[in-house]
Length: 280
Image (cartoon, rainbow, N blue to C red):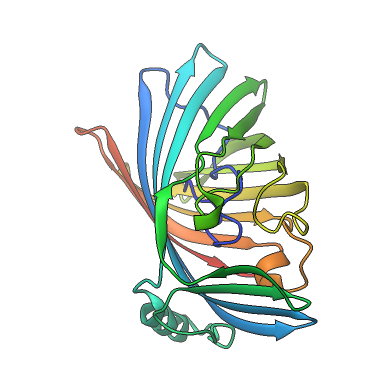
């Protein structure tokens, strides 16, 4: 699943979308339309830091990728980002109850839009009005080197930092991807993993607290249950972006996702659906 962190503090940076080691097919352009909705709700006051957050971030991401020759791939990602109070708060509370996850850390306001962070009595971010707009555009590239693939990207500051649709800086990422296939119950089971580093430019969001580099890594399994239906799970982990004590802002996200995809061969379409939780 081409997911990335949509935590409102972190989605402004150039973390690449989750990709495997495989390049796109050589017979045309891969075009993706992705819709992600992420809900954050918390109220924390610890160690000289105060956080009040109730946001829902919707992202529509347009992605184009094309293969050149046997070893190269280039792409472009254009996101449209919207921050609001949202509509999923109650649904997520009920979902957590059903699967036995505590809602104790979702103690903030409900159904509003509020993003307030203070450190040592100084207000770092204070937003209460919904905002939307074009996010930071990313140019991506990949190169196969034997059994591994190098994937990199450059994020341009096309969004607006004051609306949390961009960071106001150029970020650069580079990762090493590898994987392969085996079988499970006589069906193909594909696996892929990667490790990388994200170099952050001097952004406009809490610049005195922002770090300059963030490690990232992930692992995915995809099982072809039928010729058209596949089931998948993946884990996407990142380091800390800010020198902040509160895990909600300065922690290391671990995004675990489950879902599947279905192929419509005549239309040359693939539909992917997933649900993700930050298990940290």
